[in-house]
Structure formats: C-alpha cells, structure tokens
Image (cartoon, rainbow, N blue to C red):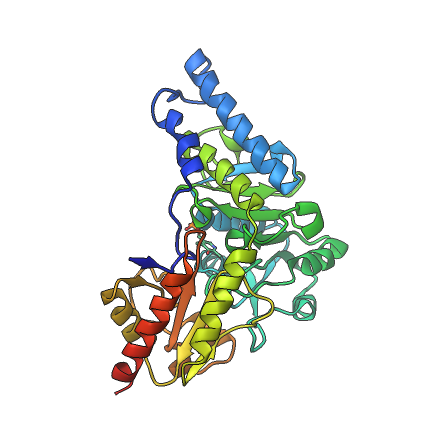
Length: 374
Ligand SMILES: *Cc1c(COP(=O)(O)O)cnc(C)c1O
C-alpha cells in the first residue's frame, strides 16, 4: 500500500511506541492513587506535562490532557463561551473552514442563544486578519481560528490575529492539530489563550490530545465527577497515551520539513502537468506535506475508489466520518461551485514517503484518468 493520507492519521513513531510500552505493562497505577504504583504513574504524567509545556513555552499548570483534538476543540469553544454567559448574547467569531469539532460546537452554542459569525476565506483558502478584526463585536467572548487547514493545508496568520485579540482583551483559541510539525508553537509568540493539540496526526497514539489554557482564562469544564486535570477535564488519565503524546510532540518539533516539502513539490509539479489538474488553496502559504487538487470532469469519489483499488490511499478532502460523499465545506467557503468541490482529492505525505511511491502514483493517475473521464 502507498499511504498518502497523513492528514487523517499517521503510524506510531518507533520511539513513541517504545516510550509508551512500560505504561501498558508494569507501570499501570492510577495517577490519583497515593501508593507507590500510583506515584510512578503520576511522575510520568508530570513529566509528560512538563514536556508539552516546554514545547509550548507554557506553564505545566496550563496544559490539560484530553482524548484528542475533537474533545479539546469542544472544551475550548464551549468552555470559554459558557463561562462568559453572563454577557448578554455572547458572540463567538470563527471561520467557515474550521474542523467540524469547532464548527459544530459553535452551532450547538448558537442553539443555546450565542451569536456566531463564520468568516469566509479568500479564494486561496486564506483567512485575512482584517476580516477577523472587522468581525469583532462589543460582545465577542471568543475568537477561534485554526493554524492550518486539514483539507487544503493553508496556513493562517494566527499570530497576527492573536495580537489583534490580545489588544482588545478577547480570548483567542487556535486549533493547531495540523500545524504541529510546521509551526513554532510558542503560545507567547502566537498570542493564544487556548491551543488544541492531538497526538495521532504527528506519529503519536490515537485518542489522546491536549488543550493549553492560559492561566486566568475563564473556563467552564464539561466533565464533572473527578478532580483530574486541574478540574478542567475529569476522568482517569490515559497515562500511556499521554506519555506517547509528549514524546511525539518532542520528536516532530525536532524534524525538518524540507525533505517532505521537496517531495511534495515533486508530486505537485507532476500532477499539474496532467491535463485538467487544478490546485486548491494557496501554494505559498501551505503545509509542507499537503496537496489538494481536482481533475476537471472527474469526481473525487470515483478517483478515490480507483486509487484505493490500486493500493493507493488518499482522501477526498476530510476524513468524512459518515462516509457520505458531500462537497467539502472548505472548498465551498473558498467560492468553488459544488461541482468543482466534488472533484477534490487530498494527498498528504509523511516521514516514510518515498519518491518512487510518488512516481508510481503519478503513473497510475495517468493510466486511470482517461478511463474515469470517459
Ligand atoms: C484531526 C483533526 C482534529 C480532530 O482531532 P482528533 O484527535 O482526531 O479528534 C481537529 N482539528 C483538525 C484541524 C484536525 O485535522
């Protein structure tokens, strides 16, 4: 199999797997237990928290472990908005191209009486700082903008947006899940108050993530019934997963994206030579491993299936959890008609991707496309 779907998930890094191993075996204590077994687990948890905090340039007491990016985004959006409920008809400002875990948390708040605005990107898939600033209101209680889009890979000017929010004293949340390998995650530089992390997009385990919450940020927890994670996220901690998350973050921060970028450029240039191939999203402000293209007159879903049969794993945009073929909300927000949006396929490279694999993909596409067009 040729795996070009690293934006959906990645395999475990061997060093991550190794770091986690003892916590699936011998060191199984509950970190809330006072005995030696518990204290060993607690030490590992503390150390992982320190490691994550160091990557963020944050205090350890500002890092809260969760079950992944989806939970962190839900906690951030609803946790801050609900804590600010005393403001009459609070307003949350986000973008139309966020991950569903942000968009649907906002839609949920809307039903509770909050006002939501969703800023549109430009045709290149970029959110302009000015568009965010123009959308701010007297009653804005939260701004949430992703650092990098999971479908078209566009990098957003989150540090600039953060500075604008900071000036006005408005809490700012960033979903950084796709940007972990690429972005300097310093929360001071980014001017963020909340930041979402997930392990499995960066060679860590599935089902574990973290939320940075700047101390002093008003926040209402969702889980009740345990004092874990500074009472922000009750429930016995996933110790092995958290150890894996910390290790994966440290590893990915140390990796250089130059090699992946040049492989990606090789793939993209090969694709653009195929008649009818069109790139979606900015080429310049883009994740090093992301390609999102469409082939004129070829449904992305059909191409996806033909490639899958040939042993090549790609995606039609986002990993749609329902399996339904819907036009991407990101491409629609960028102004593409749904016929164009349905052509999209996303190829995302990883640390194990080889040039020969990309050559094979290009050859396979050249063989498949004329048949699919007919
Ligand atoms: C994958 C992803 C999420 C969700 O993370 P999970 O850990 O899979 O729940 C959130 N935001 C973005 C941008 C993502 O790519």
